[in-house]
Image (cartoon, rainbow, N blue to C red):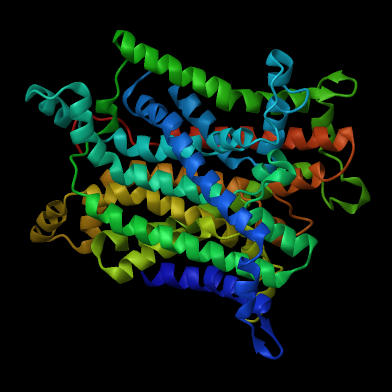
Length: 537
């Protein structure tokens, strides 16, 4: 636990505390009375209420829509499955401003829904909720589906032999086994929607504002650091309470499970019910996932002289007005380099943390588990500003170092590594480790021979999540990325912030490139997954 604690203390707690200290402190000392003053404002109360209920609604809707998809990907074999799994993960790496723009083209004025049915959803909460489902669908599919694919179906079959119906067997056998993974996915979706920024900013209009949007507005537009500091503390307190309850309740439900090779649990769908379920999931993916992505591709090709690659060719030129010191296309290499480094850091820190959480219990460990998830619920704007004002003196003067960006991205990747690996690690029967120790294996060899074969699939899923999150991270990166080394999301945001059809088209072209890079990377990870074997793990 020492290495993850040091990492989070130095690169998360220290920068955030510095920002809060500057907001609430003055030359005369601390002014805690500002907290009550800010929270008593009616507009802040409205922001807190909307932030909470839209996050709960988004989480519930995401689970309702994505859990059937998790089952299909875990238990069915069908043509194009690997490609489709990569496709549903692509939205997760797109900058939220791009997601909002894509949905605006679908549900806004002159959008596809407006043209076909005369219905507009922009500036309504439904546009926000659907965009959140689009963004978080992969979290449920990959987190829950990863464990579901390894559950031995014979346990449910045994219950049916003993007289239980299909639904009763699933509810009493499979659902309790999936509970930790479902809870982990729900927690991640809630944290992401609780701190939603770009989606609400673009689709919600002036009527809706989350805590993250308000922190940005108070910091960047009004320069009101005290209010921003109070809102950051409110985020901290709310997320801390939720994580504490989550760690306490999930731990009670986790038990050792019988895990098998995922290749043994998947089969071709048979019967009208399974084929209907598969068709429904494919239709959902087509309407909710593929349609917004298709809008990005179409707009990237719709150049002034007709459909073509004009916007893509323009990416090879240095932007006018000093917006880009290098051609925007160089952002592709920067993003890949940063994402690889961030993934390596996240796997090391997250892997150590997950291993520690499986060996110990108690209040301190539950607090440690909650600490690992805090970066998902705390404003990325706060973290980015914190990096700038704290990591600027020896021996940690990292302002000019390229490693600063991967460190910030890894903060967001670590929770996904932990939440993906933890249910599988805790499901490993401890007697297997004890047997290895009795036979003379050292703790390291026992981990290599017992734990690693069971968790290597989860490790690859975690690596995919960390890489995808790093590619799409925007909130903190926009403050610390050097102008001559922009990432893809930063380059997209800069182009969207400039007027003109050419800038908008280049932003769509870069977004399409980001989408393709993510899809290819995830397909490579799928190819590298453990080979299917006939025996059990």
